Length: 391
Image 1 (tube, rainbow, N blue to C red):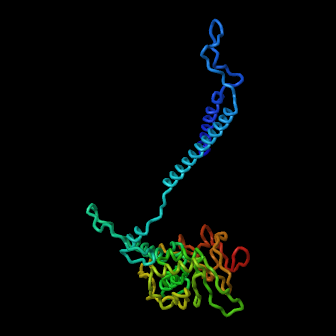
Image 2 (tube, rainbow, N blue to C red):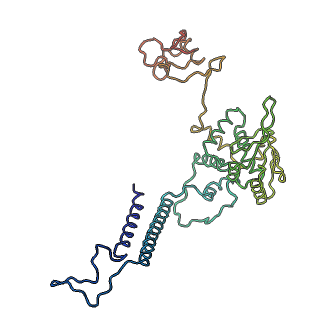
């Protein structure tokens, strides 16, 4: 309702102006109007000797009146449109000022994280060191805690690969789930197998964000390696998912379009010769490459401290792995439900119930099957089979 008020006011103003300009006096005397050549006196009505001749409508005056009417209407419409346009422009400017962007600049991020290590894929511009000394600072800077150092190392990896913390946590869970001896090395291999990282490593994009943009704009195609099965993957598929993980033998190329090839050649000319890792292949002329093997731990694109990453994800506030137990000899998971106050029917709990372990304990050491019971009656009967106990 508030937005409609300016337009309503403008329309009313235009109507008033048009009404004032188009009064009958503008067009000359009408049939019911008093003639200007007569003067009413108290005694009698006499004709003035020097009175002007009466105005009679003619073809020229009629055409002039029509022209004036059209000109006045056009002028009013032009004034209303221009005023409405100015009001809209002012409203747009106000909206832009009220909602500024909150994106942190790349220079601020580099100034914060560069002392702990470089992030090569974050920005092509070097760090601008404006002021190294701060004489106005009276108090020394606060010492960085160990928890803050863990967060900085985690943020460095996330900024380098242009992913958020949620994506990085999913990769960490996958790396720890594999059961490798060195989970951090396995995590870095997963990150190095992303298709946007492949474009940055071969010099097809100046930064990881530019590589992500190229994938999102459908400039990259992928051909998966054939498998030993009846299903054969298609020849070349255009992908727009930067998080695509490459498998051994996958081939990547620039889409055979004029715009895509021109963009790829421009980026390669700007970057120049790039040291391609040994596990990757890339032809600068044909714009085609291959993912041959996992990345070696000595050829990772960023230097990281494994201890800080390991402690961050394995500490008391690290990632939480889902603990699942299955019934013995089956793939049916043991549910984690309340089940009327009974404990989970895991093999260990069933064995302890059969042994009668903990029946005489008190307090928190008492087994959950006896909580809230005054006598020796157990909620969990190991010899009972039915709906109460799921064995």
